[in-house]
Amino acid sequence: MPEAKKLIKAAVPESLIPHPSPVNLQSTRLAVHANGVSSSCWVFLASGSCVHKLHISLEDLLDARGKESLLIPEPAKVLESSSLSHAPHRSEIQSITLAGTEDTCILGSVDTYGQLVVSKLNESFGDVEGVTYSVSPVDAGIGEGSWAGLSFKPSQLLVAAVARSLCWSIDIYNQDIHLCTLHTLWNPNSITFLDQPIHGQSSLLAVAEGSQMNEGNGGCVQGVSVSIGNMLYSVSVSSSGYIAVGGADRSVTVYDPRRWSVVSRCVNCSKYEITGLAFSSVNPNYIYVQGVDYEVLSGDWKESKKAFSFRGDSNSLGFSKCSSRDLFAGWCDSGNVFVADVS
Image (cartoon, rainbow, N blue to C red; front, side):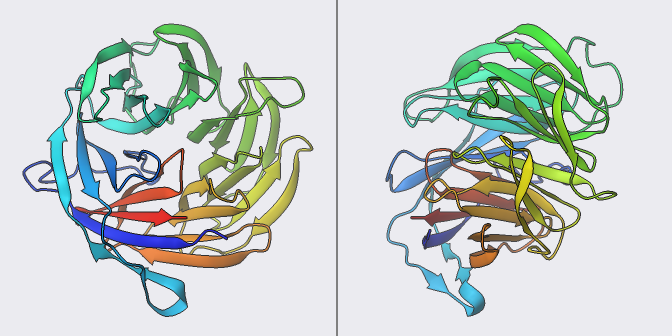
């Protein structure tokens, strides 16, 4: 069972982000990275049209718990903070994503009209090595701006998917080349590529749209209504191939895409709507769940058993988990960043 080692709280300098720009309900404007068993981590935050970075220390911190396995945060030191020279967008950034290995990472961002900018981070993760590529949507961003999501294909990082909520569309790119546009039946609220091929098909994309979850590559291959009348806000894929979705019904539903059947359903596991999900890298039978308020909890989705939880100090502006280890971060409206390290 994953055990929480520490929970830290670090304040974002007001000189860096004096007033965070408003976020969507399922905010995806935070990304976190750490090297192996490093004693520090890098947290990337997007506000307005810029991306900012915090280098936070994880040393000399103890695990403090309250009632019902509630983690108590310890204050931590911000070693460095700066704004990246990542090419600024013309409108507000809606999503940022890190992809790659522990030593080599790319940073992708997409704004409210669907413009995608991808940059390579330098070896120290202190800044970017210039813009790798930038691409505008095929419709030139015509229409009303809205939430936009981004996902890189794990086995081929040059391939990216950009979802635009009010446009009801998903654009697939290979670097700056537009491959195709998928038109959804509902507003897409979350997207992620599947790591493993299903039924001989690769490049499959899991999409939470409206109250249903769909899976496809050039069109809808499979689809299921998860909770009729309740919006879905987050989708996550485990290393073993399972897909989890959550949303307004405050429940987590886990599917096996090979059989397209429900393998588990954790009912009312969150106090409010679920806007963030991430499977554990230590044990894929565990999942991290973020509510729309300020609470993040971990539990065994097979047995619907809670392991631990922690709370921020105000409404959430973003939630993200490191791809290589169980280290995740949350950004609160108060200007504080909470980072949990789990072994």
